Length: 198
Figure 1 (cartoon, rainbow, N blue to C red):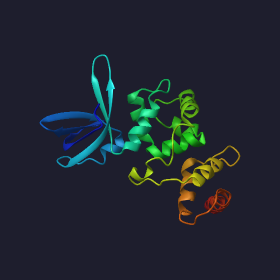
Figure 2: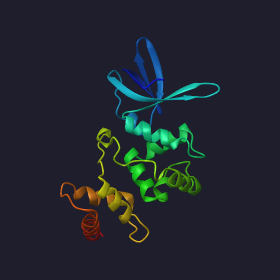
Figure 3: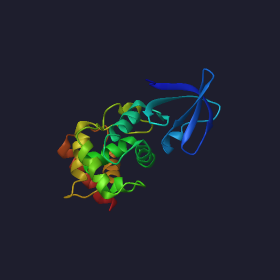
């Protein structure tokens, strides 16, 4: 099993990168966001998922183990194969995707090309209790790891009764980082921030 490939970026395609190592050039399919992190001619590493098909072996690569883990969690969901899972992660960063699933935010999922409402609902139902917002979050480039209290607050803010989007709620919670607030206080302060922005 291939865990990761480290080598020189030979070239970058629309949906893949060619990594050369040990005299072998590997074509690695990546989310669009991941492709932006590669530079031709420079050394790079991709964490690999190997997909076995009847007619081919395909490599899918990610900048972090966390993103690869999220990709792998999507694969068993009905109607979601490797290509659609890659499309999902090209549209939604891994932690934003996990936050949307945790909050039951079907609308964010349907913003992905190829995802209808039924498939989005299936993803939420199948993965809501399986994916972790905080797992390996320190590996997420530019990501903001969420504490347990923040995850609970995020769910409250994006619930039907309050109705804020995942992005709005996350931005508000991010502004409160470092204040060591419990969940009720986080929700109260976040509502103040969101109210002042409205």
